[in-house]
Structure formats: C-alpha cells, structure tokens
Amino acid sequence: MSLIKVLLVDDHDMVRMGLKTYLMLDPMFEVIGEAENGHKALCMLRELGHEALPDLVLMDLMMPVMNGAETTRAVLAEFPGLKIVILTSFLEDDLVVDAIEAGAVSYVLKTVSAEELIYALQGAYRGMPVMTGDVSQALTRGIRQRTVQGDSSGLTEREKEVLLLIAEGKTNKDIGEELHISIKTVKTHVSNLLMKCELDDRTQLAIYAHRKGWAQS
Image 1 (spheres, rainbow, N blue to C red):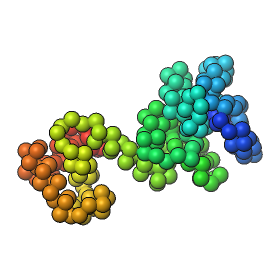
Image 2: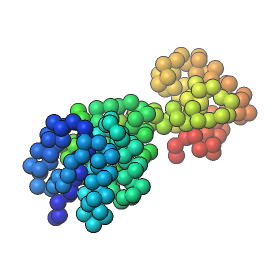
Image 3: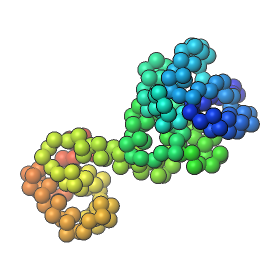
Image 4: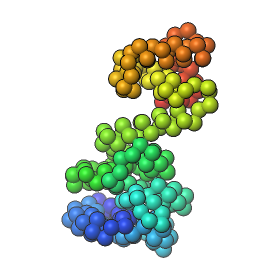
C-alpha cells in the first residue's frame, strides 16, 4: 500500500513539529511539507503541481494571512480533488459551518487522542467525513441558526427555531428542553406558527418547513 502523503499547515512551529513527529512514526503516512499559514500552503501546492500533490492537508483553522476556511476554499478552487482536514481548538458553531461549507472533509479538535486523529485522517483519505459528537452538534446548531437568520417569512427567530424542531419530529417537551423554555411557551409558539403559516396541525408545519427547504431531509 502506498503512503498517505500529508501537508501540515499551522502557524505554531511546535504544533507542526509534534504532528510531524507523530505521523512519521506511523508507517501509513509521509509528511511531504509544512506551511505556517494558508497563503504559504497554497503557494507550496502550486509549486508541487498536480502530479505531486499530497493526499491530505491537515490544517489549523485560526491562522494569520489566510485562515483555514479561506484557505480551504482557495485550495479546492485550484485543486478540487484534495482532501482537507481541519484540526483546531475552536468549537464555535459558525466556525464549524464555515469550514465544512468551504469544503473540508472533517473538522477535528486538538483535544482528540492520537488514535482518533489517525482514524480521522484515514477516513478523510477515503473521502469519509469523521466528526466527534460535539462537532456534529455544533454543525447542526450552526446550520439551523443560519437557516433561521436567512429567512424572510415574517416569523420570529424563536418561531423559526420551533418550526425546525417540529420538522425534526420533536415533541413540545423536547422543544422546551432544547430551547430552555416552558411547554406553555412552546404551545404559544406552535399556535402562532399555525396562524401565520395558515396551517391546521404540526404535520402540516413539518411539511411546510421541508417544502421551504429549511429542514434537513
């Protein structure tokens, strides 16, 4: 089996050194280069050319010059087949969504074990996204919030949140617990939704959300 070639991108020398040392101990991987920011990584890839590209780019998210999401977009615009894994300490919902929307295969926290990182890299090499539960939750929250903010239907943000949860099959109790509001308040939002959307029941609300493209199938 041929080695999995990796390009490391991180603005901290010690982080790159540690990653390189660990990956070089694994017989499956070969570190073919390092870059301290996204701009230098892009330049390095251009110098390597399509015939000598790495299989994976393991990249930090928050870096000077070009951050991980910006770099991911730029790299994939020129090298669309390249697999990119974001390795970061940040778990903010927007950052996770930005990176995945930019085209990163996986989003991995620096708190994962060495074995989990290797698993994520192997998965990315095969085109299989690998995310821990907390990253998946942050991604779901981020997408939901952007859906809510991007709509102009006349519903309040809270009503849109309730609508999306109804479309996911959540009960009033589930919705109340997730949004930290009382069941009475949930019922009020449901009633307002039915009135504003001119619908008769929760099933129709769920169908409405899906037809609008707001809810994930």
